[in-house]
Length: 145
Ligand SMILES: [Zn+2]
Figure 1 (cartoon, protein in one colour):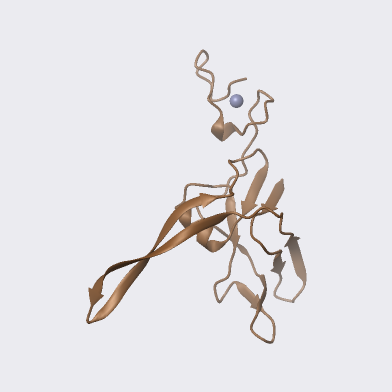
Figure 2 (cartoon, protein in one colour):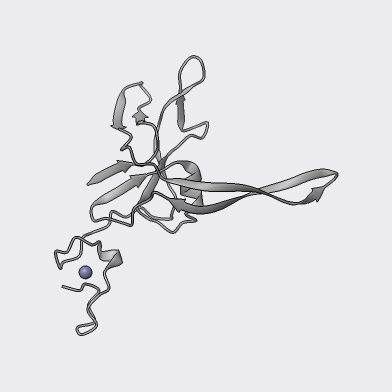
């Protein structure tokens, strides 16, 4: 299985004892999502806003045997639509910080859908993932091969 880091930074997973479990180097390709702050009203004299997410750019279509690591903003912008995408847990329980409070790693990864699925390849040998296969209308198979 291939895990491609689409954030600008190496993602380091650190165990409770401080040892490095995994390091996913930045791939050089970065997935991004635009956010926009929308004012939705005013409560008790205080403006209330919400974050609206724009389209995600730089995230490849699902590939056989491949998972992607993205930033939290990108993960949230996907709205649960991708089961092959993970992110570093930067919550207080997940982030590992140095003495100055800078995040140096994470304890775990987070999913942005209800399940994590490593896409399988189609049996036709074309290299497209089974999830994107057009299927075979003659046999009714999910696979085109
Ligand atoms: Zn196919």
